[in-house]
Figure (tube, rainbow, N blue to C red):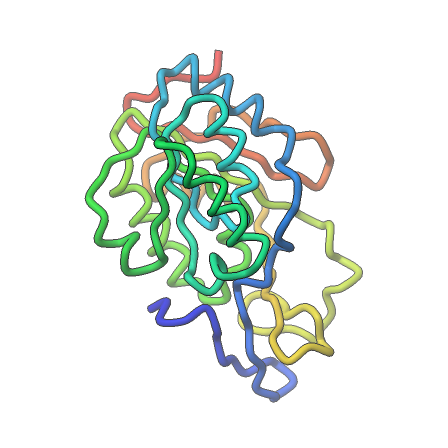
Length: 227
């Protein structure tokens, strides 16, 4: 499981394709403004240590570091080696509050506990359903009981790109003309809530700026609500 970020899959059109999950989000994106609201919530709840799973070029790690949080960024080594991510790592390592783990081995073996986890556009870009729930279970083990999970994804934004011609597993492959494709699937809000419910996390708020955004905050056992 997760031996490589490259997946060889057979699409519904019968052709074998290659999915590179590190291409799912463009590096260098600005942090989503909702992270400021999340940081304020974390401060009120005395959250100190945050796990940023699928951190990419650290677009959400950086604003949390600036606000005094201890942040551990988790990514494939191939993603961390990309120019934008490599430069972001160089800057982040100037902070004593920053650490990084290579996915999956370092991440799985690390024994630290965290107060919160951010899962930004990760689960919908994983092409195997069994790996999605497995990742959520691992994340839960990394978190204290009174902890929080921030989920970020979108629904309906890519409808013009999704067609039977690029169907694979329970989603679609994007960038048909490239050698290595991205994978994308969608979940309704109810499906997301159900996934988190299986690891005993309850939704407490849905901060969002656009209709397609699925930004959802969950609390674990003993965690406090938003208000």
